[in-house]
Amino acid sequence: MTALDSDLRFSSIAEVIERLEPSYPVFCIFPDVLRARAKAFVEGFPGTVLYAVKCNPHPYVLEALAEGGISHFDTASITEIATIARLMPEARCYFNHPVKGRGALDAAAKVYGLEDYVVDHADELDKLISIAGTDITVEVRIATPKGKAVYDLSAKFGATPDDAAALLKEARQRGCRTALAFHVGSQCTDPSAFRVAIELAAKVRDKAGVPLEYLDVGGGFPAIHKMNVPPLADYFGAIARACDEFGFDIPLLAEPGRALVADGCSVLTQVHLRKGDDLYINDGIYGCLSEIRDGDLDPPVRAVTRAGPLAGPTQPFRIFGPTCDSLDVLKLPFHLPETISEGDWIEFGQMGAYSIGMQTGFNGFITDTIVRIAGMHEEFVY
Ligand SMILES: *Cc1c(COP(=O)(O)O)cnc(C)c1O
Image (tube, rainbow, N blue to C red; front, side):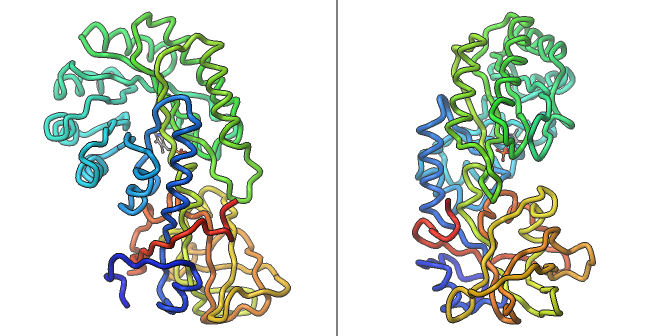
């Protein structure tokens, strides 16, 4: 079997190992898990759920989320918009990147008919209106404090409250519909960050005094990994209470990425050499595992052999990726069985977010064998 064989379906990781004995890395998608995550979010969130496509744009992932009830998508490039249009012609895309090229805007408006666009600056509003006209909803993105998120998404984008109010007024005066958006930061471990942001949004709303179509509370809902994060219900509750407290009775939107897909995928790697406490494997930071370094993630791992899971006492290992670059090393010591050896496999669990969509192909190493595995993947889904 090669990477180009499509529609590889299995019933377990053990079956992948038995049938493929892969010496190449395999990206494993669990559609049943993704469907369940989408369904739970759609049922729990008090508004419309947009999936942030950048988090994992693989068609198998998009298809499973759609089956779980997602039909709105947060898109940031014309490629993402085209992917959704091709796979799901009925779905609705929102162009939620605050800085867009003229060509992308032109195609979004005239080819794909998008109606919703994020801006955070007056010049972007000018550009947008000159291309898409005024029969659109302009979502003004406000910057929010970073709080307890792993990634700050307001360092690069987002208007100050005063600028946001001015932008809303300007968009309204020119004949556009208006809305407000924010993003509290990715892997946000504190539900009260949403209350802080909603309070800020209320100030902007009151200052602008224009009608709002909706409030988009962004993404940031955390994945579990081994972190002790609050359940999603706490976030939904905090958002609903803050909307009550600050008088938002307009429709709500959310744009989760990570929380929908993280635990629906694994990366199955193989040990190609052991040197003492160092393991050399076939995926790394230029492949699907960069978030382990950049997001300080501590994903669950387990070692598997042809005969089944490898048990026994564990010890810490340093893990190197396959490229020739010395930087290609995972940050944490990983605790794996002392007897692990060349040819054994290591499964990195909960790797659905910011993994396959971020790999580079550097040095010719690319994870391009994608398989689907049925069931809830009990080993790693908590
Ligand atoms: C990345 C991003 C998201 C998704 O963020 P998660 O932390 O994965 O939920 C949502 N909205 C915007 C605008 C983004 O840039």
